[in-house]
Image (cartoon, rainbow, N blue to C red; front, side, top):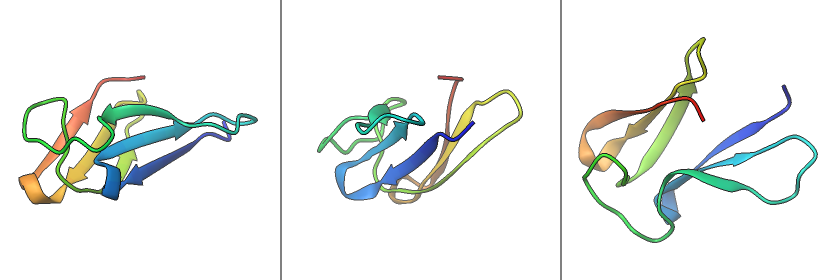
Length: 71
């Protein structure tokens, strides 16, 4: 599809860059706001998508893999 997902660990978020667009959209976490609840991230280290495009983020400082439903 040409889209790019980025773990922006220093800003506690995951961004989606849609093919052909220059600006990313934050799809998980909040910029400069670390946390432990279900919408916040501590240190997003890695990510993957399943076959239904659900997003799984390795949130290392919170010792979890956080699932975000299809965006």
